Image: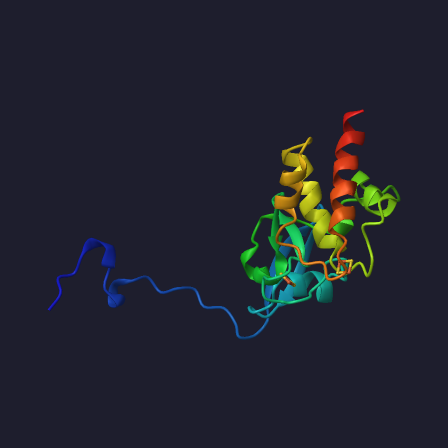
Length: 179
Ligand code: FES
Ligand code: FES
C-alpha cells in the first residue's frame, strides 16, 4: 500500500463541500465597458454567449467556439482573452471590455480608424478580435516593431488574409500616436 504524502491533501470526507450551482439559471453581475449588468445565466454559459445573447454586444464574434481562432477576443482587466473559453460565472469582479467599449462616442479608436484607412477588413468576422489584441499591444508597448505586432496577432485566424494590412494599420496607428 502506498503511503499518503502531504500533497494528497485531506481525505475526501474531511474536505469542505464545494459550492454547487446550476443546472438552473443563477444570477450574476458583470462589469462590461464601465457599466454593471445583472444577468440570469445557466452555469455553462460562456462570456461570449452572455455578451452577445444577453447584453446584445454582438461586436464580439463566435467562430470556432473552442479557443482556436481568437475571433471572440475581449479584455478581462485589460488583458486579451478568448471569451468563448471563459465561463461568464467565473468572470467575477473583473472588468470586461469589448469592441463596443473602444470608441469614444462617435469617435473611433485610432486603431479602428487605421484598420479602415489601411483596408485591413474584408468580411470583418475576425476584425473585432484582432483590434482588441492590437489595442492591448499598443497599451503595453506604444512603439512595437513588426515582429511584436506579428506575435500579438499570431493567435488570430483571418480566412480573408488581411494580415499585411493589419500590420500596416497597427504600425501606422503607433506612428500617429507618437506625432
Ligand atoms: S470563437 Fe473563441 S477562439 Fe474562436
Ligand atoms: S476579414 Fe474575413 S476572416 Fe478576417
